[in-house]
Length: 498
Ligand SMILES: Nc1ncnc2c1ncn2[C@@H]1O[C@H](COP(=O)(O)OP(=O)(O)OP(=O)(O)O)[C@@H](O)[C@H]1O
Ligand SMILES: [Mg+2]
Image 1 (tube, rainbow, N blue to C red):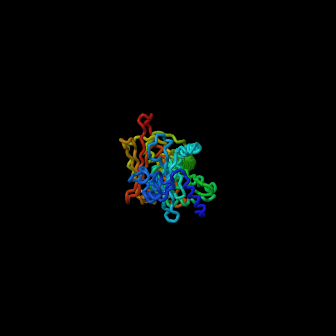
Image 2 (image 1 turned 90 degrees about the horizontal axis):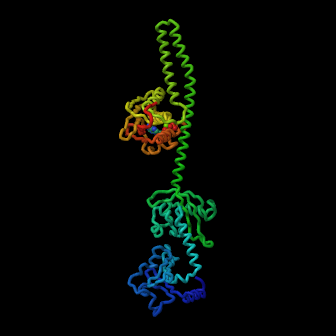
Image 3 (image 1 turned 180 degrees about the vertical axis):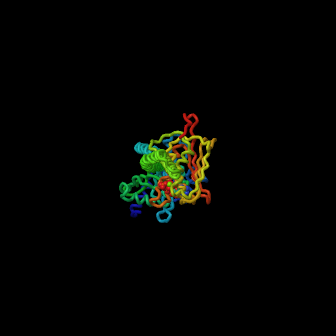
C-alpha cells in the first residue's frame, strides 16, 4: 500500500462510492462496508453474516456469488434477487476474491462485493460487450480445440472442440481442470519454455509446435499447437492455445509411406523378375539346341545301347531344364497386374517347384495337403507368386534350412473363401514382434540380409484382394501364416483358371 495520505484518499473514494461496497470473509462474515444501508449502522453490520443482515436469510443465498467465486477462484457476476420487471434494470452483484499474498498456497482472504445497475454501464460498454460476445462465439465454434488459461493454470476458455478432443465437459474443465493436467509427463514445462523462447515464431509465440496431450482417459494425442502469451502492458496475464488434432494426418502419412514402401518392394521384385526372365531366355536357345542335336544323333547313328541310354538321359535332363525355364518365365512374366481366375494350388506348386531345388530347401521336408476341389480365385498371378515366395522363403530362413514345411489349402464354403495355411517348425515369431511383422522395414535379420519389406508386400497384396492374413504361433511348433482369399464370384464371366 502507498503513503498514509494515499490511504486516506482511498478510504474517502470508497466512502463516496455511490453503490454498496462490502468486504466479506470466506465464512460470509462482513468485514467492512462503505454504506451499511437504510436504518443500519456500522456496528450492527460488521462481524455479522451477510445473508442474515442484507437479505434476512438463515442460509446463504441461492445462488451465492461468494460461493461461486470461492469455487472457481475467479470473479462472479450475478443478478440480484428481488422483484424486477425490466431485465435491464436488474442490479447485479459483482464479487471478486482477494488472495492472501503472504500465504504459501495463495488462499482467498476475503471477497469484495459490489452492486451496480446493468443500465448504468452505458452504450459504449454494451458495444464492447457485443463485440466481445462475437469474438467469444468465434473462439467457441473454432474447429481446433481452443484453451486459454491464467497464470495459475486455471482455465478461462475451453471451447466445444477442446471438450471433444480432451474428453472433459466444458463445465468440468472450467471448474476443476488445470492447464497442467492436459499434458503428459510435465510437457507443459517444455511448451512454456518454447513459448518464452525466440525459436518458434518469436518471443511469446508458438507456431506449429508438435506436442502430445493427454485425453481424460489417459490416451496420448499428437497435436499441432499454435499458442501465444497474452500480455497486459508488459505483464503476462494468460496463455491461449489452438490445439489441432494430428491423428488423421498421421494416419494418412503412414498410409502413404506404406504404399511407397510396397511400391519399392514391387519394383524390387519386378527387376528381379526381369533378370530371371532375361536369363531364362538366354538358356532357352542352347537348350533347344541340345534337345534337337541329341535327337538327331539318336536317329542318324546306329549307336550301341549304352550310348543310347546316356543320350536319353541327356534328353530327359534337357527337358527338365526346359520345364524349369518355362516356369521361371511364367513366374517372372512382365505384365501389368491383370486379374484372372487362378488356381491357388497351381500357384503354390509352381513356387515350390522353383524353390525346392535351392540349397536352402535341401533339408526341408515339404508336406502339401492341397484341396483338389478349390474354386478359382480372381487374382493377378505375379502377385500370388510373390506372396507365396515371400512366406515360404521366410519359413525356410526361420528354420535355417532344416525342418518341416506344411502347406495346406481348403475351401470355406460358408465364407466363400479359400484358406491357405503355411506352417513351419522354426522358432516361431516372438509375441512382442507379432504385431509388427507386417510393418514396412520391420526385420529381425542382420543388415544386408533382409529389408523387412517382404511381409508388408504380402499384406498389401492380400488386402488388395479383399482377403485377410494372420500370423500365429503354436508353442514349440513354429509359425503359421493363414491367408483367406475370396473366391471368384459365380457370375464373373469365367471358370477358366490359369
Ligand atoms: N516363419 C517365420 N518364423 C519366424 N519369424 C518370421 C517368420 N516370417 C517372418 N518372420 C519375422 O518377420 C520379420 C519380417 O519379415 P519380412 O519378410 O517382412 O522381412 P525379412 O524377411 O526380414 O526381410 P526380406 O523379406 O526383405 O528379406 C522377419 O525379420 C522375422 O523376424
Ligand atoms: Mg522376408
